Image (cartoon, rainbow, N blue to C red; front, top):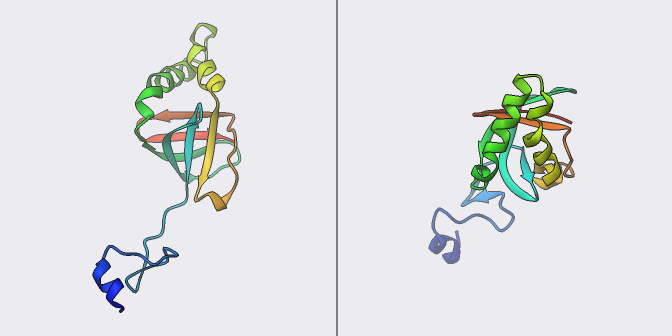
Length: 127
């Protein structure tokens, strides 16, 4: 170990991020970052991939609170069969722009899901 590596301490990682003072760096679990209006609001970790509705574990980000009420209203409307007088939240979510960004980015390009539902710590989306 060089003087610089020793001085950097155990928190120092290799320049390429692959090693942490001789030990492999912790791998990042692939996930999707949900953006609403260009702002990242949450992470979706796919637990059950499906060609129609993929089920996920949901992890909110700081900006989630700014859109949480919309998703709660959207979820209630879905449970009621989307009555015409309950579509405002769904429309606003889609009008703001809903995108899922794979992370790490090299796993694929961002895409626009048909819809995303969030209910507590779970989510599902249709691609």
